Length: 344
Ligand SMILES: Cc1cc2nc3c(=O)[nH]c(=O)nc-3n(C[C@H](O)[C@H](O)[C@H](O)COP(=O)(O)O)c2cc1C
Image 1 (cartoon, rainbow, N blue to C red):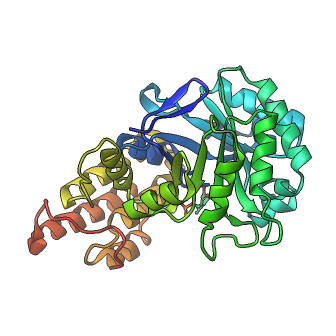
Image 2 (image 1 turned 180 degrees about the horizontal axis):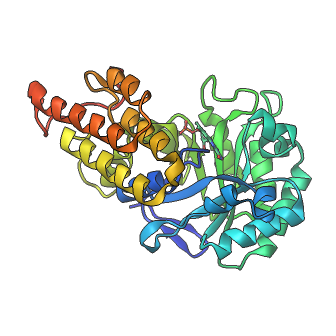
């Protein structure tokens, strides 16, 4: 198995769950870890909000369960504030601090944070240096950025190199520009150029559009990246991590989940939402879980419509359980496999 080393952290399966705002909460991170994701990182947290002690932000510094190592992602542009937020992340148990220099969202870019920092490589370096100094030596500081600001400024290779000089121990690149947002395709060529530009001992993580085993293998092969970060492709499909882990261990790809496995993941996700998620958001998170795990199954869209009209957590779970029971009766049984990507 190709192990990734980041400072003292050893990541056995070369996969990362992507940080995603309002998605990569503790329940989802846990489900992915339990299915074989190599490493998970929180959604981006405002360094300013953390340093002010804002409850909503501080609550999201949630350590992975079972003592598993995890990362916290922070964003901002004020050096002292970033350093303070990084210290808070480490105090909360983070083994790694990731700095967001890739977010394309208007409100983030308007504050000249996220991907806007790709236009200010010197400041970006200063931020990395300050965060590096703020946290203990055995806590790696990493950066996630994009291919560049727009197609005329594809500076990811030089930018990554500069960040490594400033102390970054791992670089993740989403192969799109800021102006692309999430449209168009991910540029694997620029990821290859980043891998070539950065010293060999610094892992480069490729990110963008990986939703299948084929996509994972292609990303590894074409870019030479050391690991792959998966975001949207993992929503409701933690089984992708399981497949990759199996293949990397030289085993057969177990393929898409059986109905029993899908229901198992759903039930585990529900349990984690109810035990770890804030109660004010239970219904929202449960609806999302219903939508994710019913994808590709007959009648899935009717279930989604139904649960989005319900607010009682118990009623939402009940609705999903009868849906899954109905699926089992439809003749295919608990051991039938259905791809998670099909629309229903
Ligand atoms: C809903 C959503 C929220 C996101 N939030 C973050 C974030 O907090 N930090 C970050 O670095 N990237 C964030 N991203 C970008 C993802 O981490 C990732 O770079 C992007 O989705 C491309 O990977 P994918 O094609 O595997 O999804 C977000 C993406 C989505 C879809």
